[in-house]
Image (cartoon, rainbow, N blue to C red):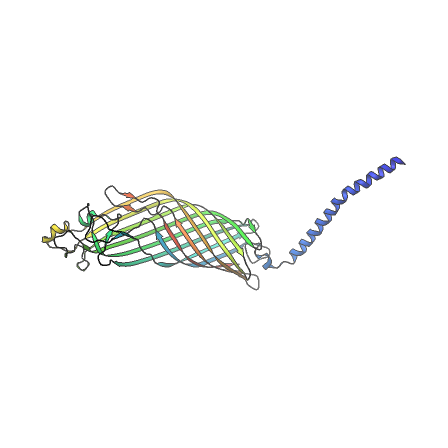
Length: 390
């Protein structure tokens, strides 16, 4: 009897040890049942933010397209045009000089793109294209007692035939044109999405084509050392001018990596941010042409002006290099589904800034010429973009 009692107690203890496991199993089953019921009661709008903000509860493969307008301004380094000197009677060095760079205008461009979502694998493949073209034409005139001095990116020898000093000018006309094409082919996959935030890194290929042209024309020169200073070698009315034409071109291709974030708010609004960088390898080229076209002068003025026939100095430089690229965009997003849940419409308004490093290789057109190293081209401005998912 005593042995049977011990065996009975051991069986009760064994059952007691298994009781927590049974309770836990029942709890998990109940939780799973509640979760299933909750999911069955989800509407497509509830699931939208969990599926790339798309329109379907089942998150099937879907296409999306986007198009937008950009209003940008371009700025470049290493493109100084002239120096303003405060003493027009001194042509050996500038006095209280101030650098002159082109004040470039804001211009319109556009963005277009498309994507294909593979929700079963959580991948999204996109192709995006950006085009921007700007033209700036600015006439400048110095104040009384001041003058323009062409910068070091001009060949002074063909300007006056005297390398030990430089020419002074009253008038300066500037013309600049920028043309930028950029293509991105990327694959993205969200790493974290909930009802408040989306974080999605992306990786891919970046292709860029840039062209910049600049024409600067100096007229109505000042020659303090001439016997007759009233006679101008580059008199505009007589057809005289001293001109510098520069063309920078770049194409490159390379890998890129970026991060997209959405911070969801109420009333279908969210704050978004995009950040990406690329390292492209390609061709950088710069061509500079300095052209001197003096006015028709009489032989008696030869001692004052030296050479009077037109001259041109041209240097062309090309090299292959790596050039980093960096872009970020911040703004406000609004998204809305159609009543039949068949389409999602989104609008973005934001600020974008891009910089192409080391692509402006400006030439100093002397006999022992050199090129600028480390100068780049930047863009910044407003972005207004629309997206359609279906």
